[in-house]
Amino acid sequence: MDDHRPVLLAVAHGSRLAAGVAANHALLQRVRALRPGLDVRCCFLDLARPGLPEALAALNGRAAVLVPLLLGGGYHLRVDLPRALAAAGLAHLPLARALGPHPLLAAALADRLTAAGRPPGAGPVVLAAAGSSDPAANADTARAAALLADRLDDGRPVVPAYLSAARPTPRQAVAALHAAGQRRVAVAPYLLAPGFFADRAGGAGARWTSAPLGTHDALARLVALRYDEARAGAPAPDGGIRRALLT
Image (cartoon, rainbow, N blue to C red; front, side, top):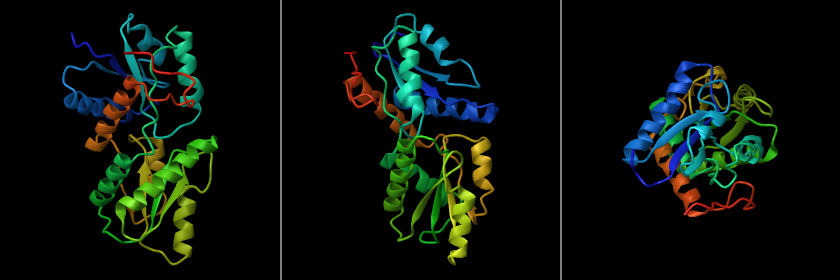
C-alpha cells in the first residue's frame, strides 16, 4: 500500500470469543470503506493477536496513529498505551482520545434500541457499560447516558450502570426501576462487541436489550474522526503532556 498517510493502528481490548474479535475486524472494514487507501490495522491489549507490542514492531518505522477502540478514558488510555509506546521507543506516535463519550455513539445506541423493538418513549433506558475502578471512566459513562437521553428526546431517563467494578449493575438498575413502577425498561449495552459482558447485559431482566455497537456506520465514522484529530495534533488523553508530533 503506497498511501502516504500514517497507519491507523486500532487497539481493542481483545476477547476469547471469536465473534468479539471478528466484530472489531468488521468495524475496521467499515473504516477502510470510508478511507480508501488508508492502511488500517488492528491489534489487541489482551486475549487475542496480534498484541500491541507485536503490532508496533510490525510498523517497521512507518508513521502511525494509535486509535484506542475504548469507549471511555481509564487506566488503559492513561497508563497502558503510553507505557507500551515508550517501551517500543515510539513515544512520539500520536495517541487518539477514547471513542466516547460522543454524539455519534449516542446515535448508534439509539438505532440499536430501535432495532431491538423499543418504541419511542416506552420507558427508561439503562446504559450498561463495562465499568471501571477509575472514577473518570465511569464519569464518561454518565456523560454518555446524558447524550443518549438527549438523542432519544422522549422524556425518559437514561440510567448509567456498570457490568463490573462499580454500581449499580444493570440488573440492580433494572430492578430499582421496576420497584418504582417502571415495567417497560430497556437495556442498551455500551459495548463494542459480543462477549461475556454483552451476555450479562442481556440477563438484566429488561423488556428489551439492544445489540452491541458492532459495525454501526456512526462508530466507523467516529474511529476515522479520532484518527484525524490525533493526526492534526489534538491534545493527548493525558491532558496534553504528550503532543502529536506527526505532520
